[in-house]
Image (cartoon, rainbow, N blue to C red; front, side, top):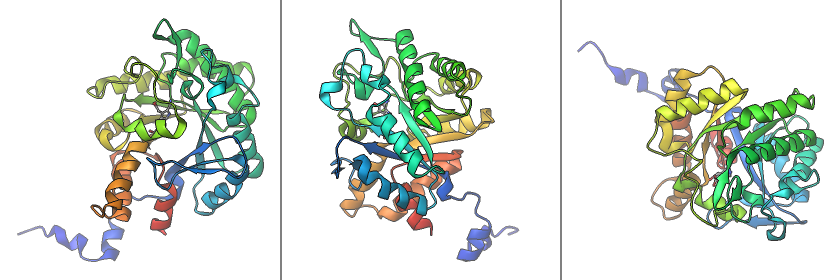
Length: 322
Ligand code: PBG
């Protein structure tokens, strides 16, 4: 026998020395939900341990996030029913909840990297990411709205706008809109390869944004496709994306690796609400060890090639890594 691979696994010290992958707090992006009101911390039943925050309570939460070493949050707003309109007008309101949340976060914590979701679903009575006409999701008018929405968020101080809608041509439209308005320091994190997944269910509970008719398969990708992810990613890079993202993460590790091998800009992956819920639910029954499941799921995403991981487990993971 010439090789004894177990030598490199003999002790914790050796294992750490030769570890090929390491998770760090600065790898994580924490998605956060905000809602109107004061003194509100609403539990989300299908995402135990995750909340919707009113802005006044957000300050403390952001402080604890920064103290753990997390550098970035990704903000989502729950929009009240009476503001959901066919035109999705509220998405462009400079005094809407999300722009206010961005301003608040950047005023209190200038060093925090604030990212904001760009898509119309929370603002649409149909729960679709784009504008709806005659039962169809219309691309080009949606893209104009998304570019304007990005401008509003950039003007509010967002470091990155994060379009999650999967319309064609939105990255170049957003980049042009930012350039036209001299917002040359705002980044674009593009959800480039976002699949039409069952794993967004708990998120749609959190924002009450489930599609009112049909599904999202005419814009989100078919889970059967791998080559198409490369095409989407390359288009977004050419259009000016600064960071690209694959979503979901855990079921799509092959996509993460394939994309990683074909690009030279930072790659993010989104461990989505359903991935979170699956771990939480089985841990609650004692079927999986929660801490081990969290770290292994995140390590796998990193090993597959993600530089950044958007995850609802960001805080727990930082505590576990300490
Ligand atoms: C909306 C959006 C969704 C998620 C992020 N942005 C839901 C969807 O596309 O229906 C999902 C995130 C998650 O499940 O954690 N554009």
